[in-house]
Length: 367
Image (cartoon, rainbow, N blue to C red; front, side, top):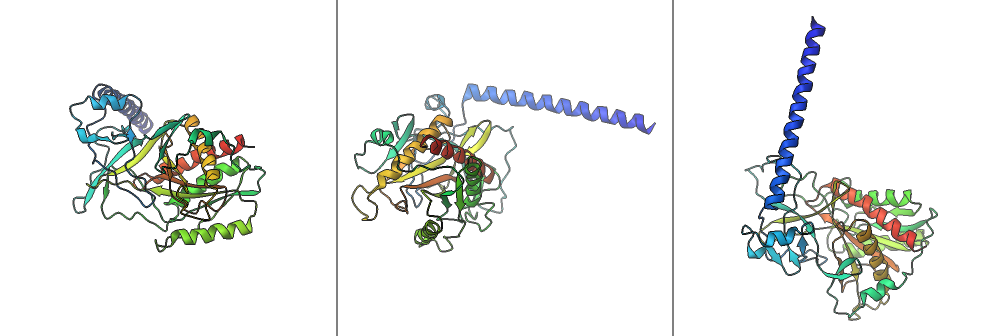
């Protein structure tokens, strides 16, 4: 009798589960239909995106191909939606209504908006934001071979490090953030260090020797680059075969009204934090020790080209600026931003995997 009752109960559970699955499928189909008819919601942005310490400001933003023009025609979107380099549109969240958490009314909060960042000037199959006024022919530089040629035999040839080691990510995406949120952490599973580990694993799986230096250089924010320069020199002395140094950061974009942007792309059905490569330039001879900045630029143009080939929406436009940021250390010095503080650590580490693959493919092509 108990066995019969158990079977009956089990059948009811299975039936309930199947009904729930059908309901969820129907709701998802309805939501997709609404999105196709109405387009993304009329989220509005400030006229200017906030600037971080490395100068990534006023970046153009677009949705998936064709969605921006659809939004421009919508009466629900204000004229302030458009920026100088594109537009700002909400990133469609693949969730059912009501799945986003409600903020604690006892704490001050502000909204987060998922976006796909684009803009800049097209070079080959990718885009560059050039603020150097150097007159550099970027297409010609792309055709020049970078001076780095990695053997990929397991010997250490790549250094990963973090000038701002404590830059943190969020645990989850809720559609808002608390204004008292801590954007730095000593928990390296929640910071850019975790991204570095993901990059390292992918590169090592492809045969490239990597040292990942997790020294905390931003206990005091001022002087971080001086301290990370010492980290670079220590590793160059210990591993003289290093040709490529990569400083991994995470960005931050907040409007004057407090809205934070979360640059996100969907890659192979999974969310990834968008990345941005920053290439330095010495257009005005500001630094005597940075005469060979073109060598870095050539490598970074190749990385950007490979990223656009493999995962077009994964990379933001390359930031080509009059800056040094320790990129005078080697002819293969790079600075790469991975997401912002409101991207989740899961999205950021997935981006680390993708970045490792892109770097490996680039290095393979230079052998």
